[in-house]
Image (cartoon, rainbow, N blue to C red; front, side, top):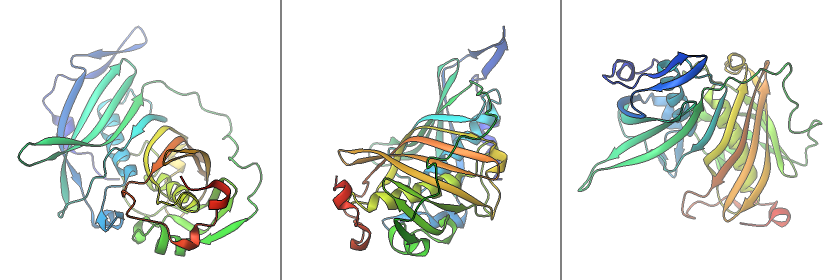
Length: 313
């Protein structure tokens, strides 16, 4: 685990967050606070790149924000995130750390919005928003058993793509972000396969390993490329929930994943994702994916075999 930046915990602020009274959570002092922090940039992070530039994975932004929020406000029960948006890619500079701003905003007594920002210098300095996610204080009752996977039966391989080819031609990340394992299977509007968690550090022990969600989104990206005519990149999701996070971070363990296309219109794809195995499960609903290259990056011709079924956006 990566250490929590001490600047947040030691910040001179009257924003003290939750206090308890009459079995309810209430807010003290300010509704919004902003902190300047240092985001560590280990070398392996640069294996995540887009259009020739190293960019911060959205899963690491979530992980960073979650670690800060839960360290400062342990009353929040982290089993669900909502209304996540990723409006602008964060291009990684040279060096081993990046100066960022974290903004915490209480929307009401049970919901906290966390935002990751950077400053853009120039004639007029401005703030750029890169990630935003909503935390809630509501504790979810645990299930007795995990819900069934999206597919009721094992997939019948209608189309099979080798994951080595995926990372060479469709999701060209470096070795540290090649989480999809072996083969990816298409069955109609669903893609399924397996993931392996790498032995790399992360920020928040209360969440599953961030690379599981990252790998599941790779599967959705590949499925989308097969029919949409562009390379879909995640820009938001409606909700993410999980159970037994401690079982969702074992390096080298093989996890199952499925993504199902739930809608497409106006250049936007929508997927639901699921990852499960080793006694834990992750479910993401309403993942939105778009072309963020302005049409500059296109899928190779060989992957576009499902256009007749779905049509291009």
